[in-house]
Image 1 (cartoon, rainbow, N blue to C red):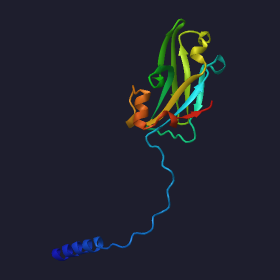
Image 2: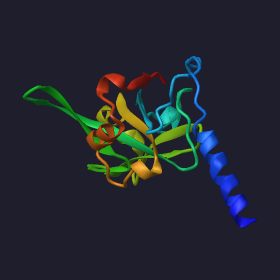
Image 3: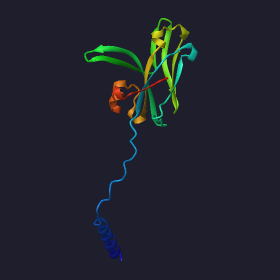
Image 4: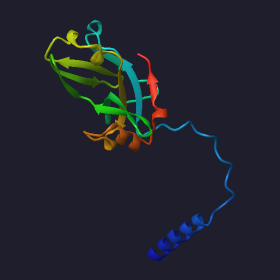
Length: 173
């Protein structure tokens, strides 16, 4: 009886593996893929007493944030001239500056729908000059946690995501 079961099992396996036919036609093209490694977008904001030195930025509709994602924010701190042209200097938030009035911090928090950029300080923020409040440019990255680290530079992040500056979406706010 055992030999009969073994024989049937082996012969059915042989029969099914030897059944081949002409391949069918290819299926229809699927939807465009989603960048599973993360996305980066850019926004320029003003911090004023009228907005409590805070700006709420809605994630673009093509950016989906999952519970396991990490949101990273970078401040364009400077643009310097190099051999090949200008080079952007990005600093990861939170970023602390020691100004004449005291300590100033650029910081953020986020939900699954938005990120709030804000200034914090141990002094009256309305005494800040426009260099710290007007036309502040940020890059916001949504990255799966396995690809993020606490002190990742913007250049390293862009390299990991295989993204260059021309692919960064600039959103208005």
